[in-house]
Length: 370
Image (cartoon, rainbow, N blue to C red; front, top):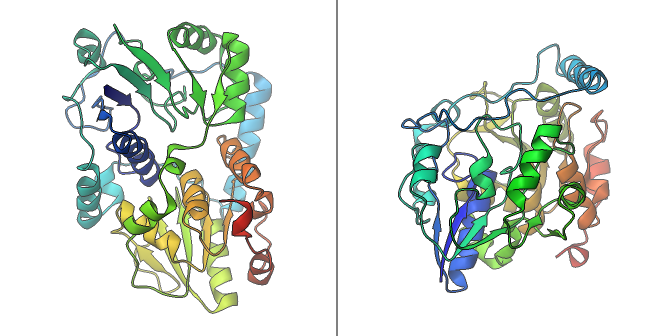
């Protein structure tokens, strides 16, 4: 039986890369012939814009929602020392050095891809043939993406079973147009599962059908599989700070924890403006396997990332805490994840006032979560 997966793949983003690999590998280990549908996105050099398919570039927003968002942004700017928290619009070449890019390429080479589709039109005009089509996980159904998400609802499929596994919307409300589109596209699915409870409730109300909540695909592979993949870093006795964007307040907090504990601070993120810094070790060359290693061997992990939180749980990090900034509109998925594993108290206060001693005193009971 042949399965085709459409998801956010071939990405120089640790979470997207590892979640797509996990679902692919899990199905392959079950004995299926699996491919990931190689639909190109705007960051690909050969991407061709379609005139028929468009992103939801301008979303409806009430004045109350607008005001609330602006206040949160202003609060974040003040907290970030007067600088707006950076929005990652750079390409992979800007964010990683050549060594890291090679590691991403080597890792992604383990996945068998379909023929490339440089545009959405190419996909719809000549769709690949499978027995089962699966919408994969991560932010595949998030209407705020800067590209058209309709293909991720499998509307190009002509014949075959359609399933979603742990699809994520990433936000809690849809506009009226998005609701109409989602209802139409989801009507063709044979089975639907999502990653967050908020998405399950939203889509059940929208479609009137049963929708399952399932774990992120990274949980499908055994702990030993991930541990064997993790590359042990040369650093020891360190605090890992992994951030999706360079937020000054979080970096300053990490430096403070390192000073209190006498440990080294290792900063790994995807937008690092200070590669040479005396107060911490800036990692610029980590691929997916090195990313896993830094989490697995850290004395403490501090992060604002959903998938770093996932792997802190999976890999048995000695201790970890997750931070949700005031401007993060996707924080619900982190809150739900921590609640699922009874780790609600491993969410950092937004004021970042806990000392290292306080953090260390809140130990993790591994017997209750895995």
